Image (cartoon, rainbow, N blue to C red; front, side, top):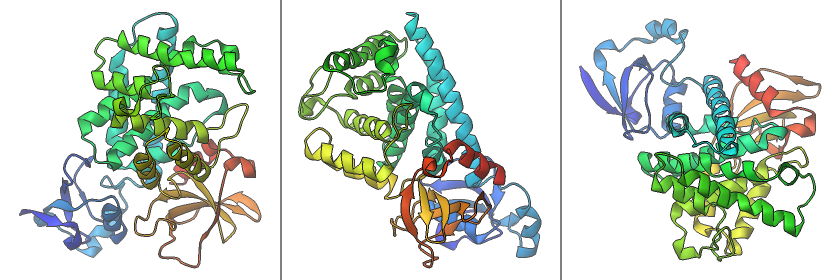
Length: 391
């Protein structure tokens, strides 16, 4: 018999056909047994409320042991999700590279691959927003131009998911974010890659990238008004002192306000050849200051910080046990005690496999401080590679 059951009443051994609530947010690769209590807990943490169960296929605990050895398709797990998210991120960078090439040579942008990859990102985020949030920390200092627009698109999609924005709208604004900085390819390299502070004249030239982006995107066949709107507004400020058009607050839509926050946050936290990125918590402080100065929407800034979490997914932290860990997911009831995955011992220094720790449960362990991979002669790419291979 096929029945719909609340998450509070499902048990290990039940056979899940689909997720029925929330609708259109989660998608199963295929039907699967619930093989452990931790799997059910993970569904609860993700916000799943109701499941479609085939009671004729329910198995006893002893029968489930053999199933648990198979790769679970219901929740692929952090490491598998990271692997899939990494593939999407790298594919996005390749598409971004082609966009810059076409824009530089005056060719119309091909929107089809942009629509496809942002759709893929959207589905991945709606299934597990934590995976891509983690992967955007795998950054190359010399690839900021390529990676920034991809990261902003991902952050904007995660933000839209948090605000419960309609899926179709989320996709359109993600496309706009993916394209928003394409005009930077028209800025001279000596300004784009200058390691020192830009002069006033150089900054005026840098600001022209926004107008170049708008011009290029407007000529893109099939671009929607909403995608164009997001790209147009990403450097405008509520106090009317933004660029390129000094638009006032009442003309800046919610989506334009959202991309401004995501754009600034990524710029602040990204490391480049000539500077190290700020830790996420420092970036939050700067966003709040900009909101207080009436440059950003204060309500949306607070919402973005809540969306990302006090300790954002993908952030590195030092634990009281003298280990480094990566923040894996939030505890919404206890935001200062997230779920973390230790991966590195500091005495002696070496990578080590370890179980996830729910800091809300294991109170003997706590976060000492946020850290950066560079502080320990590590980089995020090797950390993520270790986590993926460990799985």
